[in-house]
Every structure is written in C-alpha cells, then in structure tokens.
Length: 189
Image (tube, rainbow, N blue to C red; front, side):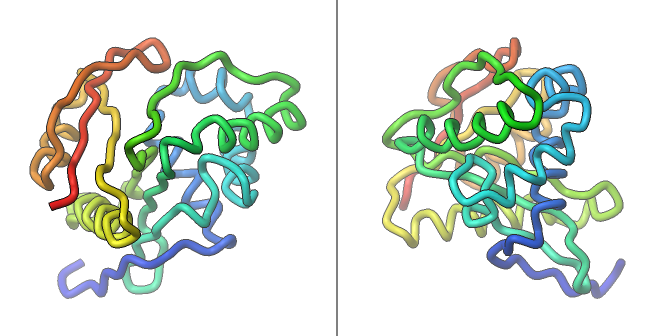
C-alpha cells in the first residue's frame, strides 16, 4: 500500500465496530473476552462503544483510516473516571449477559489511561499503531492532562518497544486478567 493516505481522526458513533475490534485485539485472549463479554463478545463490545458513559465509548476514541477505510482505533479515558465508566460498561454487560466480571483496576486518578489500541491485520506494518498512540498522547496533553498511562503484558515485548519508542517508561507492575503487566507512563513535556 505505497502512497496510502493515512489519517487519524476523532471517532464517531458509527465507528463502534472498529473500536470493538481494537478492544478485542488489546484484550487478545479469547477466554478472557468470553469471560468479560460473553460468547458474542464483539457485538457486546460494539454496544458498549456506542454508549455514552462507558470505558470504550466512541467519544474517547480515535480512528485511523487508510484511503477512507477504518484500519484501527485507540480508546482511553481519565483514570479518575474508571469507576463511573466501568459502571456504564457493567450496565451493558448485566443487560446482555446477566453478569459482570471481577477484574482489578488497571488505572487510577492522576493518569489518562490508554485502554486499548488495535490495528486491523491487513493494515499492520504501516506504522498505524504508532500514529494512533502519538495522536492519542497529543490529544490528551493538549487537553491539559499531565500523564498518559497504560499496561502491557510482560509477554508482549514488541508492544512495550512501541510504547517506549514514543516516550513511555515503566513505573510499576499490575495484575490484570490473570496476567502480569508492566505499568507504563508518559509525562507531558
């Protein structure tokens, strides 16, 4: 795809499918996805992305397009809002699958949390993940936030290298979905 026109833009409600896909890619583990969202996890995540008061709400997302086709998405939110946004997410889960998972907190007040980023397989290798992360940080810092945080699986050094290459540093560890994760942050310059 030489000379492809790549843009990163604010997400719209109709981008729920690509946001859901990015969240599913970020979680990565089919067992965890089914535990979190049920058998029809992609449809559930799409509904969550269409809602106004959830962790994966389209209002908190950016979408990358390649020649007008949605190629990936990134979504995140103020860590201080985790509890209320998670409650919105859990309301959808209660309605759709009749239960909510028991998961630890992946973020906290004091950081704007990069929750999920994913690039559709046919568009990988084009630098879209990096563009999404950089655009996300620019948006967050432009809004006055001081730091962006995320977690990355110990077993995903490739992702950690990407985050490190754009200024993220290890600041601790977290246990999430049964996996040991590095907690990374990038401070506003």
